[in-house]
Length: 433
Image 1 (cartoon, rainbow, N blue to C red):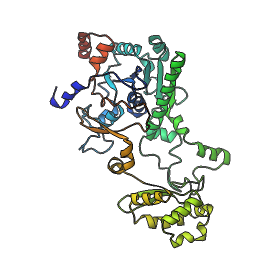
Image 2 (image 1 turned 90 degrees about the vertical axis):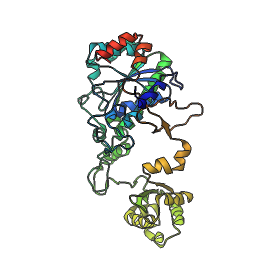
Image 3 (image 1 turned 135 degrees about the vertical axis):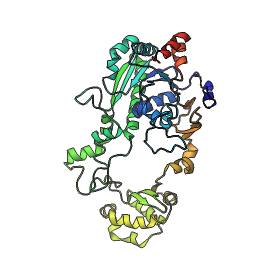
Image 4 (image 1 turned 90 degrees about the horizontal axis):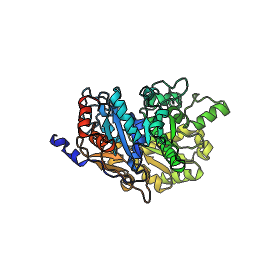
């Protein structure tokens, strides 16, 4: 073992703490929609064992994102070091990691033995993959009668499109979110990244927690089927009502509204340019009281006395003119200066913060401790975003950064499954693990 990786000797699995202590998860998930869901379980005490394939690396392992990396965001390394994946390190902190070749009969047998020792199984492959390995719910119940089996996919496990492949931007498009995104009278802009991976992940983790509570109460397991597309649909309520009840199409002159808000008719309501390169501030004014506070903060400029701005409805009807006046004021000030001044006067306002602001500037985030650091034997110290919830008597158990590829094979296969060291070595030599 080289010096760079010598710290792995200090990474041996230990007893966990947290409300999910005692829950063992056989985790077949990859990418974000599944891995973020099981990360939440791992953060609070569950023993999550991530199952990987050495010959088909999880994409986050192939996307480095480590310090001083010359590649651009999203560019895969053609010869990746599987242990340098910064995104993987984020998704898989607090988890164990094993490698199993599921294309071999021995590998599938090993996976079944691990499932029999677990109480939760998770996967987010395309529907049908687990079935081809005979890992159906019926088979899993034979291995563990109280098993919780969670499927996390783009379109769900049933229906005419259930076998379609999906990715975050695809989910966002099919769910209708992309169609309603953008500026007025412009083509749909969509969402730049796979945000729905994370949104669906939280539904997945909530479903898992409900199933665990149900099993605690009844002794019965459950099969869970979460569709990321349906999660996206759940975010469309006002637009669906407007189309179905009012017969108003989403894309019509002046719509979508971009940063403006029609219900209630808020004005000014938007993101405004500030001093500096690509610096912005968000401002929201909902009623006459908010408006008077804004006028006071701006030192009662002459334009604020325009009769068109005398009511909230009038301000909304003349949003373009109002935004132009406010922009002329904000563009000479920094985002945080505007935010502080307006908030001190009781107006909703927030600086549009970049990564530097979040990591180094924002005193509120620093006070709350949302970011924490874990050391990694290859990447080195790295910062993570924590769970944005605090409890009075529960703490997130951040015991280890993400597993190196196959790091916990020996522990899992010998101490949990009871194989001998020689048997484990033979499986490794045969390419099974």
